[in-house]
Amino acid sequence: MNRSMCRRACATLLLLAAAIAGGANAWAAAGCGSIVTHNYTPKWAWITIYDAGKMRQLDWGYVAPLSEREWRSGGYSCAGIYHVRAELKASEDPSHDPGNPPNIFDTTMQVPIGQQHDVYLKTPVKASSTQAKMQDWWYDATRFWWDLSMSPPQAEKAVTMFAWGIENATGLTVVFETPMLRPGTRNRYCAAPGAHVSAILAYVPPYAVTVTPKTGGCDSANLGTPMVFPQAFQNGVLTYLGDFQIHGRSGTQSVTYLNMTTVAAEFTTQAGARCLAPLKSATLPARGALSGTVRLKTDCASTRTYDEKAFNLTVPAGQEMVVQYGLQLR
Image (cartoon, rainbow, N blue to C red; front, side, top):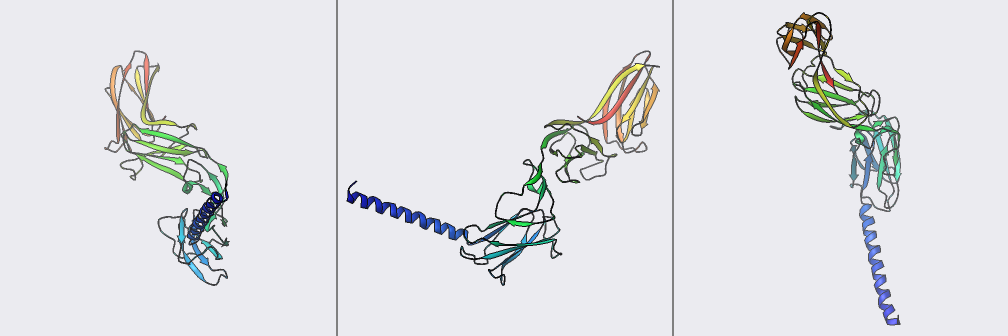
């Protein structure tokens, strides 16, 4: 390369380097124009940002649980020194700030000079899951600290969660509840008659699914007591249905009705009618082909029917036929 070509090439490289440096400096200056506080806790945090000497308040206000807020009123710069303070409140209700209750914790850190103007407020995590939102994690929430890393706190244990499809094959509105990561918290799903819900179940005790039939809509009174069904720990589809089990055994020619629900069940065939309290049975003389219905009620004195199913059976000579009806999740 001759000297003339070198001068032209070197000039081009210098201009390119200057342009890159200028762009980077402009980007850095723009990034330093604010401070962003990320609240990685389930609590409300009152944030105050101070100047270098902690003498003047530059910005202040609430940051909701598991949210972030950008602050610009303080006239921040890359060369500035700032301190960010978090006063934690007991409230975890994200719908509105808690007002001015006492602090449960108070922590402050210095914001580093330069590009890093994002700071992260954290609290210990007892259980987390990649299949659950951070709102559903189980937090210790007994101590808090600021951090420069955007990674969420390391959980004591990672929990597997399972996806369930639940088909409501009954004529009842039904509420299904499944355990979540935090003890005592459960997800609630309501299914109208014939509807499908997609549910998530966390692999933490108690593992069971709680099923509550309703007398009307989702928030109506319970129809009987809730039922608890242990489930296998794998993804799948379950069906909630009224299930007949009909079988014969040696005995006098008769039909025995068995109510395996938590409500009153009225059995009616040509052999007669019997209303049975939960987990009760009754035997009637019967023979030949029978067609019948079972009707669910709050109690035997009630005239209102909440669900009705039909069944058929034949009572042979020398046989007792057992008609067992239950509400099942399987």
